[in-house]
Image 1 (cartoon, rainbow, N blue to C red):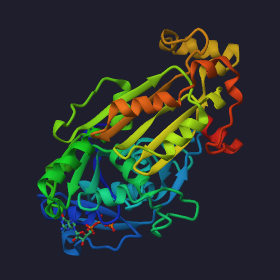
Image 2: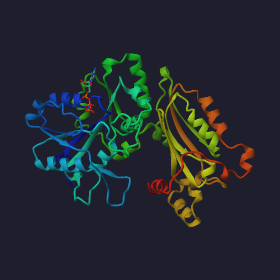
Image 3: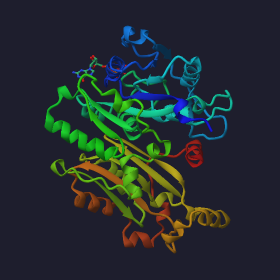
Image 4: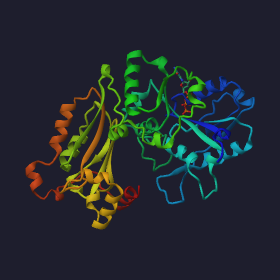
Length: 407
Ligand SMILES: Nc1nc2c(ncn2[C@@H]2O[C@H](COP(=O)(O)OP(=O)(O)OP(=O)(O)O)[C@@H](O)[C@H]2O)c(=O)[nH]1
């Protein structure tokens, strides 16, 4: 087996446009204590990396973000082909001790991490032979955070979309960057007063309890905090989001009393009335900054629905069949594979249930729970034929459904 210590460590800086990635990069290069660092930046960004810092023993490459889907049948894997090739080239070059990547401001961190973890059979490249992903860093702009989070704007509206079919809202990007990282740098702290910083830090800790949280001014981050940390672990990063930790119930982060930053799980074994739930979602409680989970909707009794909200962005759609809705043989096969399902099996409805994590700033939990309860079917409705209730939630196309089911 190859020795991990001979592999070149890699740190990736993610974060929305203007958060301070380049400023951090320059600071770290200035304080790298003789490490020979190769830097990869994205072609779209202006290159502000200090050329002099790169010269002595370092290198600067520019790549253009290029996503490729894996050809080996794993449809949830997307690799960054640009990085794949450039990192391999730099690693084989043999001149560098470290690779530092500044990802594009509109880039998702997961494909970058997958690029280092999976073997690309089509191109015959396996980066894990030469490199070790050491640390995924997400930079958050303390000054702009709430403005961007609650703007309700899409990347297309801001002319920052990757293509015409890039439908992401700014907040979707922020949340995906925060929920998948090892270190969160809250930058531009010089522009925000202490009380606001404490509150924002409390929210970030709830959204991402696993990552180390650092405050920075003008990108001054101690290089030891992000280089050679040994922090990256794909499995741990994939399950590190606050909502997921809350669902797994093994990491209930302490509440930040002062600001009432709280998370709670809403769990019910009764379906929602589609119209009442739609009305509730369109009048979303402002205090809830993030919600995610599975919903049992009366009008879609065969399919579990996924609800994901971040700020003003709400995504709702099919997540897969309830095990109880599968043909008998398949159901038995799943139950044999996942015996814990049987422990929570309802004699009539099987595994159908709603389980939703809500994260908020001083949310009125009692009121929200009562409002959600009022969206459930009543006893009288339960006795009728509720499967045919009208449903004006986003229509599901066959392609969407198939894509969702394949995941
Ligand atoms: N006041 C203040 N300004 C900062 C801080 N960090 C960065 N800036 C400024 O914010 C602007 C954006 O910083 P960059 O480092 O270029 O941000 P970036 O994330 O690399 O931006 P993109 O490459 O466009 O994605 C620059 O004008 C920086 O000088 C900080 O901590 N405080």
